[in-house]
Length: 278
Length: 278
Image (cartoon, rainbow over all chains, first blue to last red; front, side, top):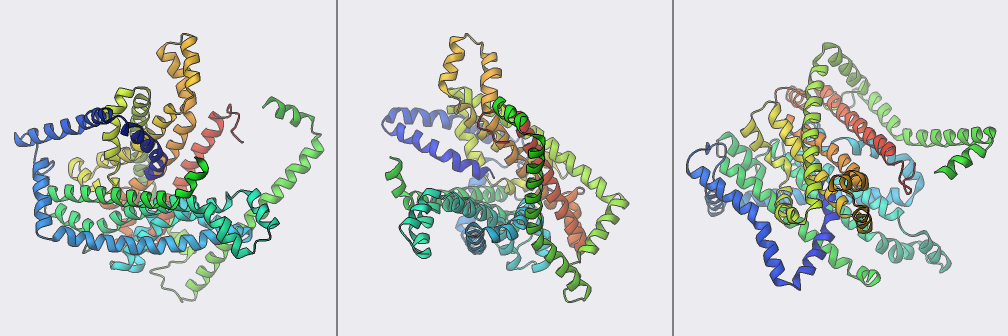
């Protein structure tokens, strides 16, 4: 849900960066100020770890984590497990997104379907999606299916809500214009509804992917034989905290990369909008 | 506001009564339409279960689930675990939300604090907070502390971001007015910044609560010896599916209740806003 906040925050960051481009020195200063705190934390952490005052089993030093990272990359284990995780996540998100698009469009277009279907969906939406994980594991076993279903279920609702809202938010006046111009239903869909609801759908998609990624973490931590989460839970049983840290960092970096990628697609697809807003 | 009150007084009681009846009827019809699908599902589920067409192990019938709920409640297992979970949630929520609000306001009010702190906080926010569950269990044990801190970490970010955005969204002209009126820093905070930030803070609160429940579920499923999530995981291991359903139902109910409480508070606290629709 914090990802929701992030979509709001993103524009502010972007304009801030644009402003700073004109003043290279300001950017550098800003960067130094921003890097100050993380750098101090890292140095103190490393120094404390080196003096042996903290138990390395609880808090391995940054260098030990970096070493573990290098070892996992060199042995090829990290890329392999990351591949498993990515494949699983994309399959789950694909299923969740397709079902959400279809159901969301049906509810968005028809009041009758909304009246029948939407109340049930709103009840399901309130269920913390991860609470259903034990049930899903019971139904589908410990295999691949249950993981994909957990991810699909987790990623379903943001997109479903986004699709409905963006279809319902299309300007009524524009609808009336298409009626006056005697657009057919298909032309209305392709020329008005799709372009007008695209921004909402895309930000729904972004949230959907973020939620799917989160669900992947849980699905793999709960019991799996492959993937980054498996690497982490195995490391935990073997008391290798460096590997747990590596897993956390990989999850964070991949999450950020995927989000930036979707944001870039969003910007590209919505370039025409800038012409309107100026 | 006063105009609306005057209008309401002017309308004859008979007309008001009729309008109220109309409204109730419409609400009832909406409710009935919405209830069709869930009711059908429940009935079909019960009938299929009774005829033993679906496995009672995977899909215990609604009546069996209700029975199991009553049994768990009477035996006291449910109460104990429910209170443990509630305690963890509210302690974690209070801690995380309080800190998030305080830091968000501070960073919002001071530019130098923003430069120093904001990017670090944003960086930490990118870590999917579920993935650090192992580390928290490792550091703080499987008792209450690790759960409370994990929930606090999840609740921190929405409130931080929204109170930060709220402070930055305050009209600068109003700030100038307070300066002209010679408000002290404290009075400025209490009389201008806090009321103006309130809508955003409440939005952050709602997101925080949703995250709190998800974190609780995950934390209790990963490693705990009490609580609702533990009850569910335990039941799953014993193939006691009805209890898993009871757990999901309770989580849904709790999420709904807390969300409604925040909505209610929002309505009371923001009644002064012009744009706010009751």
